[in-house]
Image (cartoon, rainbow, N blue to C red; front, side, top):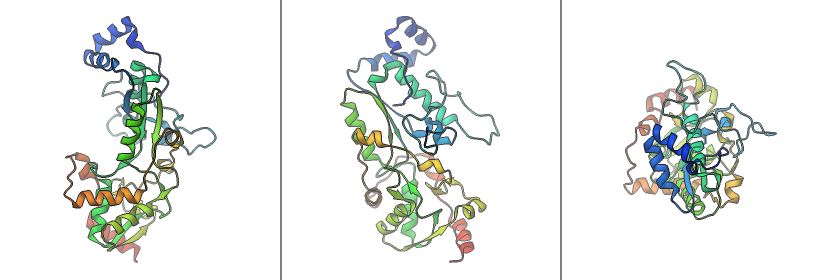
Length: 298
């Protein structure tokens, strides 16, 4: 469910429908089938569809805040898989991912209209069954015990959301008679990186000792943000996402500590995520972690 004002419902325009069908018959056929659904059409778009998430577009009087009204990237509704792809060797901001998602939002609202489209824009989704590997990596690392790198500032706010809370909102919205776009994240400032990592240590037995490493030291050692130490990123806008509209619509976010405990219980009970290539991307090697811990000297 993506958001950007729609342009009516072209599905009711025969000439437009025939033109689209001639170019992309599979999409048109799928749209005709879904258009028979009596109520809501749902589309999930991660927050990368918003310019503010890339640090490009400010949001009114609060330039560091991303809201549902922040500008959407320029992906068109008929974008193919190559739209927005950057040239080889590009080292600037990568808008490809966001443009593709913005295009999916516009395609959905263009086909079905704003009133029949609910757009959920989750941030980082954690919880039992996670297949990306972020929270499982931290839990497994904490379970190994010993001195454990904790990235950045302990009081840095973070806003991951439990998958079960996203699902609950999606089901609730499917039963409503209104459309809308909602940022699905935990409230700003409610929890911190320290809260996350402390919960991981406690859930796994309390044998790990958190050693906080400043951002600059991690960058100087070439630590890859977001992957080698999952959820760590220095860009200020990553965890400045407003979700009051979603909360007013019924979003309830359980405490992060509950998500951590339940995910560890799932892993210990033999829970196995679906195979996904991104799982292998996450986690710093023990050797690299040891070098940084030695440099910290405490």
